[in-house]
Length: 268
Length: 268
DNA sequence: CGACCTTTTGATTGGCGTCAAAATCTGTGG
DNA sequence: CCACAGATTTTGACGCCAATCAAAAGGTCG
Image 1: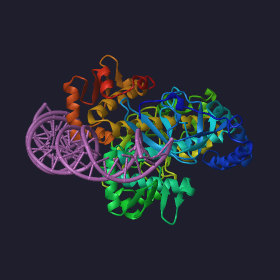
Image 2: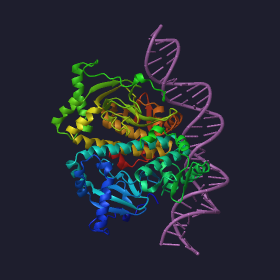
Image 3: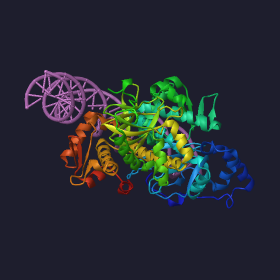
Image 4: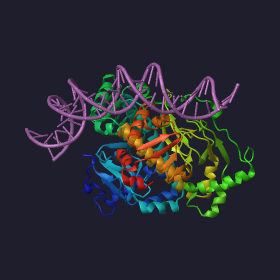
């Protein structure tokens, strides 16, 4: 029910030391989390990683449909996603929404904000989600102590920017069929890379929790039209998509339909 | 003639000390340039500004239709734009292109690149252009010496990202009329803010060098349809646009048509 | 099992693209 | 200052892709 917001869904924070998570489970999780921090902390001397650990605020869990943060609201944290899918989207007055990214494990959320400091988009858990939260206050501390992080942050944002431009190109210049082909391929590659546990090499398939409405909101189509075009792709034997699992059946032809520059794929 | 590239147009660099620019003119320009560096260097102790001056590589001039850099090519410089308009765009195989930003005076170009270091978009001068060029090699030097710049860079990129998301929302969810209204308003605000000399408070108008084809390539419309819808807006007395000048006649109604959140405008 | 969500299918409409030609603007050289 | 070529804008006719409305079928979860 886009456009209508239940404030109770926002920031149901469980602090590490106060919540349901046992100290031991937490320690294990933190250790795993540390690996995931690579995207932001990968160029840091490893000795510094302990420092980042100390600055991490809490572990948080969200279940499907819960919001991590909300457009136009001052966010308290930014997040390193550990598991699950999160949709990042903007809403228009009448409830239409544009999803512009699905955050996957390893992605960072919440750094890009409007000039006044409020979030410029909302973040909703698509699946159950685990995330490491950093207080936005700590970001300054972190950067003051470890300036390398700032550059890393700039490059991560630049990468997001690059994807967003690609998305814009896709949405405004390609027809529905090409958009779908593009989206499925991109998503497939991203999941394979960032969430290998959700990828099966045998079947060339991934876990895929999105509804056709999600896809429509991403590509600027209605769920009805997504259904029609997706059926086409299935009939043509290019793709299979059911029961929360998506299989790429003919990668080459999909890439062709998607008008993807093969060189661009390699980069991901 | 999108899609066809004249290599002669790329990087016609004039070094400060080797080109047509007199030493005096250069010194004046650099001084002005320094002001324009605010976006990247604004948080630096002013003593450091001399250092950035030393790291600046050259002044460059481009005339209409020249390329500053080209998609998929390793760029040698990144730029601080001093005067003029530059279109940043991606091209599809068949020549269709998607312009996703017009760089205006004060903007930085060329930092966002693909993971392999090549430019992920092209930059073409819409008008005659003056830019300060920094060698990409020097960026590391610069940041090593002045770490604050990295954070500034991250925030600038985040701001670009925010605009790109907005653009995506606009293009994929709004009809042609709303897209145009949005685009004219946004452009008007940006020019007023970043190039005050091109803005006239009396007439509420700005210099506007874009063709309807540019606008179409920006908003995902054909030039034909832009022409039709633009005429509507003119007939309705909302806007005037001719002879390279664009006037906002009814800001309130335009904002309404554009479905712009008034709060969002204030932020710019 | 029943309520709700998601997907599918059909019929119809409309916005925007395409093609084409005329009109207007712009800049350049004679 | 005019003439002319090329670029840009305007206008019309027509077609198609995707939106909309509506309803049925299939899935999912409590």
